[in-house]
Image 1 (cartoon, rainbow, N blue to C red):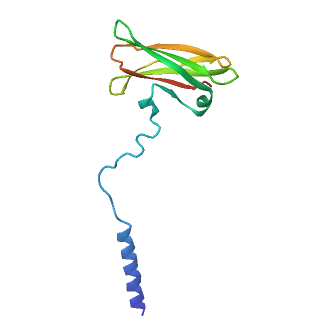
Image 2: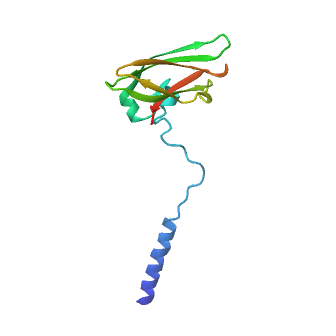
Length: 138
């Protein structure tokens, strides 16, 4: 009886070991690759929820300068009835969407329901695309 009980328990333990040892070898595919990738598909993005409620863009104008540099002008509009302070930056990208030049974050003060135009110029003539980014200023 004891011997049968020991054999049964040993069999269960051995079976549990083999069940828990399944392994998968090789690489895994990335998940959610297009979720929240607005910087890859839009020319204007808002970097946090506070700015999303307060700021919008009423238009973006891009110009190719005679020396080949890309110049971008964006109208940033305050949707609030209070004065706000945000930071604005532009990422210039090559044809494949890789960042080749970034401007520093500039502080922008927007009056109640006001609109300001901010301009950015790439440092070289390789810029083909861009993303204007806006975040809260702390």
